[in-house]
Each structure stands twice: as C-alpha cells, then as structure tokens.
Amino acid sequence: MPEIKVTPLGAGQDVGRSCILVSIGGKNIMLDCGMHMGFNDDRRFPDFSYITQQGRLTEFLDCVIISHFHLDHCGALPYMSEMVGYDGPIYMTHPTKAICPILLEDFRKITVDKKGETNFFTSQMIKDCMKKVVPLNLHQTVQVDDELEIKAYYAGHVLGAAMVQIKVGSESVVYTGDYNMTPDRHLGAAWIDKCRPDILISESTYATTIRDSKRCRERDFLKKVHETVERGGKVLIPVFALGRAQELCILLETFWERMNMKAPIYFSTGLTEKANHYYKLFITWTNQKIRKTFVQRNMFEFKHIKAFDRSYADNPGPMVVFATPGMLHAGQSLQIFKKWAGNEKNMIIMPGYCVQGTIGHKILNGQKKLEMENRQTLEVKLQVEYMSFSAHADAKGIMQLIRMAEPRNMLLVHGEAKKMEFLKDKIEQEFTINCFMPANGETTTVITNPSVPVDISLNLLKREMALGGPLPDPKKPRTMHGTLIMKDNSLRLVTPEQALKELGLNEHQLRFTCRVQYRKTEFTIFIVFSSSYLVKAWAVLKGYTIQHLPDGTVMVESIVIKVSSSAEEPNTKVLLLSWSYQDEDLGSFLSTLLKKGLPSGLSSM
Image (tube, rainbow, N blue to C red; front, side):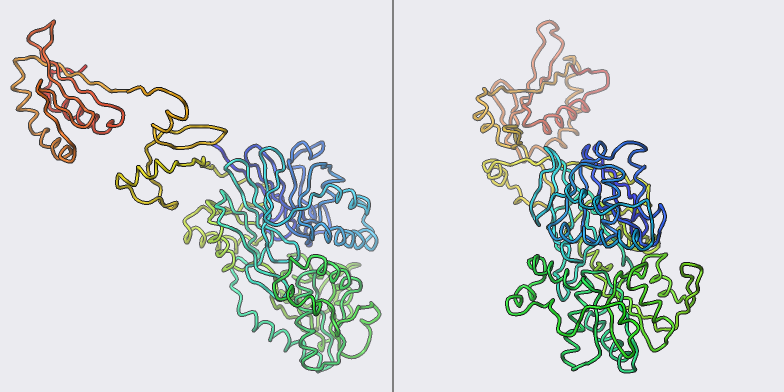
C-alpha cells in the first residue's frame, strides 16, 4: 500500500527550529529549515545527520520549501545549504525571498561579530544560498519535476507567509507553516480551498488558547502604555522586525495622534525604513484597507515614530521603544532591557510567544533574578506584561482550517506537548480523523488510499437516472455499471455500446451455465422438496418478466431454465440454468436456491 512518512527534525512537540521531512510517492521534501532561539550550541540547528551521516543532502532531497522569513523557520538555511551541502531548489514566496537574507545577515552579525562565534555561516554563504531560491506566486502550481508539484496559499501571519500543498500523483500533503485565521490591521486571514489532503501538517503554538476580542486587547495595551508614560516611565516592546511590529506601530501612531501625546516613540534603527520599502513593494500581500488607502497615504510612514539611537536609552523622561528581537534572546531589545530592568516605573510588554530558554520566557514566568553572561545577576523590578498580539492561529482558528481543507489525517507540529495532546483529542473527537504529534526524530507513517480520477460519460449518467438511480452526489459513494476504458492516459466509464464503438470492437456474449443432474425416479421427491425454496424464489422474481416457452423452457430476463432428458442415461434428467453477465446476481441466487432444493445425494455439474 502507498504511504506518506513525516519526520520532524525540529518543531516536533516543541516551538522553534521548524524542519519537517516528508516522503511522499518516492519524493523527499524538507519543509522549513529554522533555528532554535533558546540554544546557543549545536542544538540551535536541526540534526541533519538524520538524513545522511556523510556526504551532501542533494542526493537525498528533491526540494526545500520555506514558509516565511522568521528565523525559527529559515535561520538554518545557509548552514544547511552551504556548510552541510545542498544544491537543489529552495522554494519561497517573493516577499520571503526579499526579506529572508536581511534577517539572516542581522542574525549572523549578532552571533559572529558581537558574540564572536566561529562555526557559523558567512555573508557570502547567505548570498550563495539565496541564488538557489525559486520564487513562488500564490495559487500557482509549480512543477518541481515530472511527478512532484507544489502550490502556495495565503497564510496571513507575516508579509509573504504561505501554506504549501505538495502533490505526487493522487497523494497530497498540506503544510501550514505559521498562519493566522483572523485578519489584522495590515494583513488578511489565511485561506485554502477544499483540497482534502492525505495529511494536513499544522502549527499548534496556541493549541489550547481561544483569544478574547482583539479590540479589548488593543484597548488594554494602549491603557497600559498611556499609564506608564503618564507616570514618567519607559515602555519597552520587544518585536521581530516585520509583522507584529507594524501592527502595533499603526495602533500607537493612531492613538498618539488622537490623544495629542508628546512622549517620543522609537523603533530600532534601519528596520522601519526596510519594512516600509518591502510593504510598498509587496502591497498586494497586505489587507484590503491598506491597499485601498495606499494611493492617498502610506500607512507605514509614521509621524510620531522615529528611528532609535542606542544613546537614547539613557535619556531621562518617558518614552516607548520598539526593539528587536522579540524574545529578548539577543540584540538591542536585550541591551535596553538590562538598562531599564531595575526601575519599577518602567514596563516591558511582551506581545508574542517566547520560546523556552529565552530571557522573554523567563520573565514571563515571573523570574525576578536573571543570570546573565559573565555570571552577573540582573534584578527585574520593572513591570512585566504579556499581551498576545501573536499572528498565530488559536485553537478555534486551527479547527476552522480543518473544516476548510477537509484532510484525511492531521499532524501537529510547532507546539508544546501537553497543549498538543489536548488539541489532538479534540480534533479526533470532532472530525473523526487520526491526529498525530510526533517528537523530533520520530517518524509518522500514514497509509494512503489513492483515488484514481475517472470521467463518467453523460450517456451512462442518463441511463442510470432513467433506471431510477439517484442524482450524482460527490459526498455519497454509489455503484455505477459501465465499461472502463483508458485513452490518452485518462480513464473513462462509458456505456458498453459506446466503448465498443470507440474501440472498434465486436460484441461477444459471455454466459454462465449451471447443470444439475438427478434420477427420473426421484423427480417427484425433488419437486416436493424444492417447493418451499420456490416460494422464496417467487418473492424475488415477481418484479421480473417471466416467460413460459412451448418447449417447457422458462425465461427470467436473460436467465434460461430448461429440463431435458439425458441421451446416454434414459433414467436421468438434467436441469440446465444459463445467464448472461448482466444478470450475474440473479443467476447466482437461482442456482444456489435450486441446489439447496435437491435431496442429498443428487449432484450438480
């Protein structure tokens, strides 16, 4: 039986380092190639030795697909392609292709130039890696080779994020990457058609969360920022360069304008300009409102938000600072946090998910003393708030996507084991499909029942309906009687007459025959013994045309029942039963009935 195998090298019962291997129809595909924010050693990247212990990955992989530009989905890409070795195609959308190298270079600078790590990819490796990228357009089917095809769908989440359908023959898998089923201030909601894949591989970051009203959250966020600024405190909002950052900037910009606020708002230097450039370039990926108003006013050109200089962190008085990265694991957000952590007037608002092992995760869990590098202890006195403006689907959104795509099986990745377990049970209960949640390095095998598409001729449908058959319904399977012909690599079910005509063949009749012998002296015994069975036969036969011919032959449809004497043995009678293939069911029923009616000792031939 054909099967699909799925093995997470990262993001199996974990958030971060997304990297999923899929084997389908003899093809091997790598879905995402991310890094883990919580580790600074070998565990930071996926374990590619699972694929091969030695040599390059090119011989083992048919293609690599990157869902979006976040580092936990693309951060290991140059390491995989240039240091481990992969020369095949890497697929991603146009916005991802444009933004991915910028974030990779940023990551490299922090790791190599600031932290001094040596076993790491170089700027040249990032450039060489990006040369292997093949851009994807939404809803465009791309033929990777003669058998493997992929198609991208809009995922919301961040600019350029895509869900991908992978198809080999009649088998298919959909991988969501990260997605959001709720539209926000700058992006639309994820969407996919009813593609009914064999497996839907979905993220499950917020597997047990059902978010409250977005408007309430926005009001709460603005209130907390306003209160902190009014009492002279500073607000730090750690964000990733693109996505949530723009969402919150639009929100604060509008509020500052309306309230005539004077406290400065800053954004990490360089990133706002880059973000503006890419949002202008890929305006078609944003939501309808932004596309409509873009001609009159660019929503990403802010009047109240200025570029941040690191010296501003020491300035007295209130301010709001958006700084990267979003989990406080390195970079400018961590530097500012160290300076402001000791003052209870200040506040840090974490607007998204934080991976275990990061400073963000530690402070959200209430840790008040942090061990920093050089064994220094940092005391946390500032107020810590978590307000989810995450662009991930919540439990309700995941269920909504399952209803949209109607998969045959479900597989959860990019989530915490306990939360996944809860969602897994809920999915199996509500949709009565299998749901899997493999750990890293664990393989899930799903047996597929590939459906072969067959066209049905209009004449055959008309004939079936004339016989009183129900109208065709794609949700209800039904038996159709016809001739299956294969022409030009496609299958069609047609009437036998049409098949003969198209193929230029003569019709031959196939008949089944059953002979029953018995001695003449036992004829009376047979009639008496058979009578109870003939009552049963009549109940079935009364709907059919029965003919009695002059020579004693009885005909029921194409079935012939005839009694004759044996020339060789005068004392023996032969009961002959014959029928065509069209009346196979009825013929078999009558032959069984007549045999049962015989006394023991009489034989059939």
